Length: 204
Image (cartoon, rainbow, N blue to C red; front, side):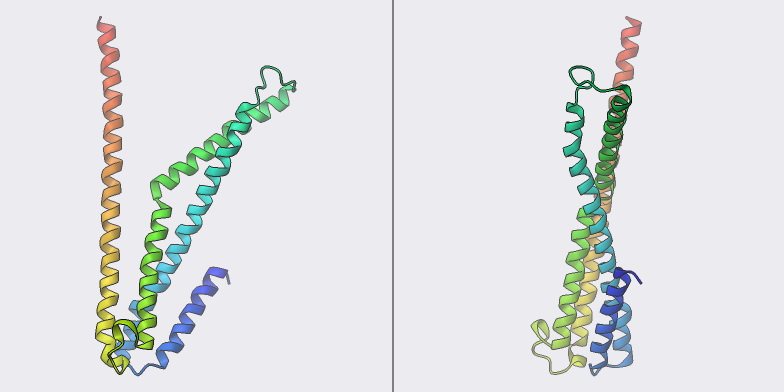
């Protein structure tokens, strides 16, 4: 079992034990497991996935960006005395690394893993905070004497957090699509302008 699966299993087991100690009905406990806990585990996984991808792509871009100037600075056509084999290695290494850096930066720019990681992390921590406060009857549940009495308020807070998460994510996706479409339109417009200019020159 991987570290990720083990962590999620521990979370589920910890909260299952916590739920058993609450005096709640079967329907309410089902809500805790299928709605609140399920969302916590799912968003925890998405946050960790996005974080790992963000770190991998960013580190690749940063390290590659540092090494590239050093490779470029090796002026193999002038004072540096090396054989053809070494020259080819340096040339192809520079080319390959430049492509890797460009691809890593492009993937991060397209998927926005850093933004997704922060988004999922904020949401899952909000859900966790509500769960712990509800379990201890603190915070907004301080005036309630039992979990059963506080349950409706807790369920409402959970749904508000999930709804807000959906709205924010949907807004970001729509905005990203608009920006990408605008970028594509600008590229097409620039290409058409160049073509028209070339045609005008030919006619002259």
